[in-house]
Image (cartoon, rainbow, N blue to C red; front, top):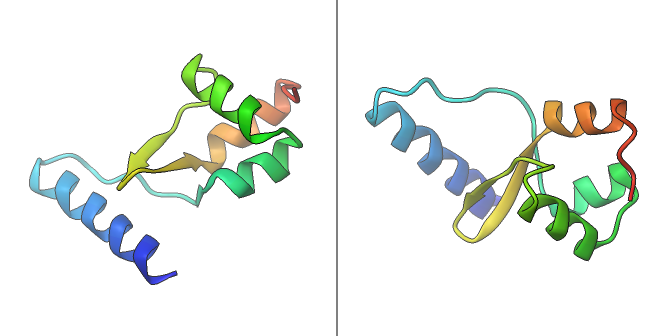
Length: 79
């Protein structure tokens, strides 16, 4: 959707202005992650708060690097 695209562009511009190289790769939202890991919203929130699943928050919405989720899958994290 357009609002996600806009938020991502703002994120990239902010990091470029700060002299930080923007992170590349595919980003997933909550629904994508819950589906890939077969976990509930509350489990995802708990894993996020525990620091088990790293994320980035943009305009109140959480995004996850696909590589981090793939790593969680390789490590057998499910519930």
